Length: 69
Image (tube, rainbow, N blue to C red):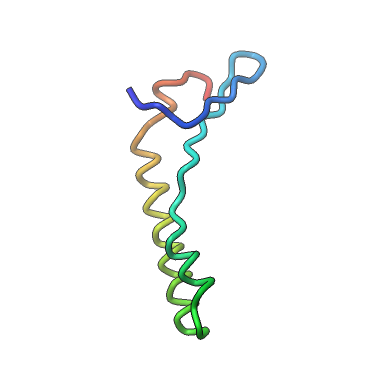
């Protein structure tokens, strides 16, 4: 059984499941980039990392553990 970072309990027995971790390395690298080419490449890396993270979150299937989520 997985443990999300937070479960918000709403009226009517509904839930919002929060997994608060997010990849930031690519974004932080982009902020420190010295030129536009590097900054763009780092932002593309960040976008790829976020997409991969979303796929991993989907595999957790929190909705099966928390009804009405």
